[in-house]
Image (cartoon, rainbow, N blue to C red; front, side, top):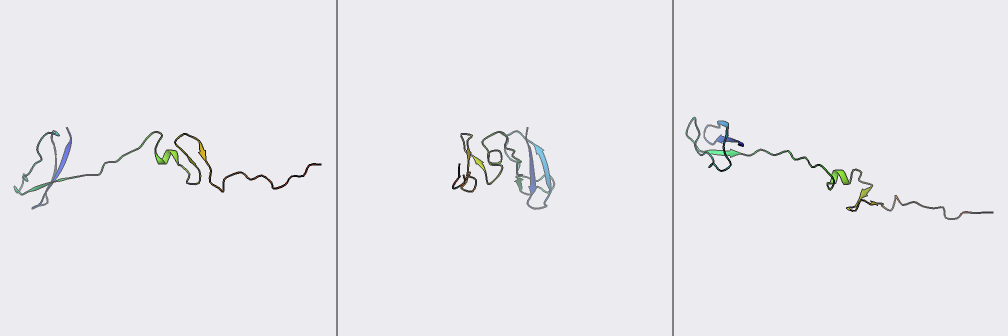
Length: 87
């Protein structure tokens, strides 16, 4: 069962309670019987595996496309000497 946090709008009393997801939210403070509001907390998300920016593009200069081939920018392309003399 998930744990939900509540805060009273009148006395600022904060508490947590375990409730089923199908249960109705609490509406009355257990201390002063004032109105309650449910507190929301940010959830930490970790993206693992391929297909995410951090894994696919670790360096801003070099990148890979979805097909796994390396893409080059104009500064990374190889340049051959303009003239080579053979005797």
